[in-house]
Amino acid sequence: MRKFKVAVVGATGAVGLEMIKMLESRNFPTESIKFLASESSIGKKLIYNGEKITVELLTKKSGKGIDIALFSAGATVSKEFAPYFVADDCFVIDNSSAWRMEKDIPLVVPEVNSHDLKKDKKLIANPNCSTIQMVVALKPIHDFAKIKRVIVSTYQSVSGAGQKGINELTEQVKAWAKGESIPTANKFQYQIAFNLIPQIDVFTDNGYTKEEMKMTNETKKIMGDNSIEVSATCVRVPVFRSHSENIWIETEKPISLQEAKELLSKAEGIQLMDEPKSKKYPMPLFAENMQTIYVGRVRADISTKNNALMFWVVSDNLLKGAALNAVQIAETLVKNELI
Ligand code: NAP
Ligand code: 3JN
Image (cartoon, rainbow, N blue to C red):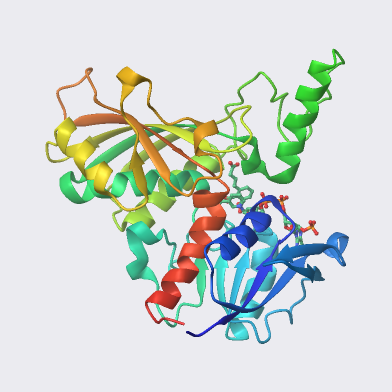
């Protein structure tokens, strides 16, 4: 079996570290691996398959001789460096929003649109974490009954805001537990410990935040259907890991509760966890470090006679929401002989 020369850009970050774990644990066929980050990480050592690898500085020449690069160093870094990697004939799977809505760049969740991956499209965008877990759950229902409209509220963990987000919740909770005054917010707009913040990313002119508009726009592109209307409210919650979503959908064709549960239970990448009488429903603590998207609380909306369902979706944002989806894209390139 062919093996690949792989690079992880942003290897020292919250997502990068999970990418390394995913490549290792899923036995991605690596001939060699390079870890790249900013100046502040040069010389740091990270372990890959028991071997100590020294972190190197990302430069415009880092893509030379690399087959696949997984980027998670933010949109500015991707905009600046990814084109050099592609020019060096390297596939780039980019976790940032830099390229997601560009017409000729595939935006891929393998369970939904692996057909968008092509041999000659070397730059591939990984969607936003909240979009990924939602579209995997929407896909089987859309194929059966055509979804017209989605209203979603998210409950997003602090790890979505990177290592600084994780540190901020940790420090605030520690201070509270010691009876000290809680340090002022820095990464988030307000104190996140014991609070909810209905703002993720900056506000746009229509009153939605950028994070909310990512869910609207990316869903249409991944599902290949511009007619799906999505209205999102994204909320930061004091949870370390895993994003949760309350999703309401309206379909064109009728779909019974039983049909929806059956479709969800058979769908790739999903585990239906829906036994409310025995208190079985997905929760962030349960989904942490898991590679599955959990769906529960599936029910028909009693407020309307239209074809409307509601359900609750939980998934590890650093895994399926970022690192795992990126590695699955790489695996699909290999499996479909596109690389
Ligand atoms: P993080 O914990 O803050 O890590 C950022 C990483 O980027 C670090 O490895 C950092 O290296 C590296 N970096 C920053 N500036 C760099 C530069 N100029 N050159 C090279 N490397 C640089 O953030 P994270 O949570 O891992 O997220 C990273 C990015 O991934 C986000 O900005 C976002 O674009 C994307 N992301 C996507 C999703 C998604 O929904 N799919 C979810 C989360 C994040 P140092 O340690 O050396 O500073
Ligand atoms: O906040 C979250 O839960 C997800 C955050 C994602 C994120 C954070 C910083 C920059 C993104 C993203 O993936 O959309 C970006 C970005 O690349 O714009």
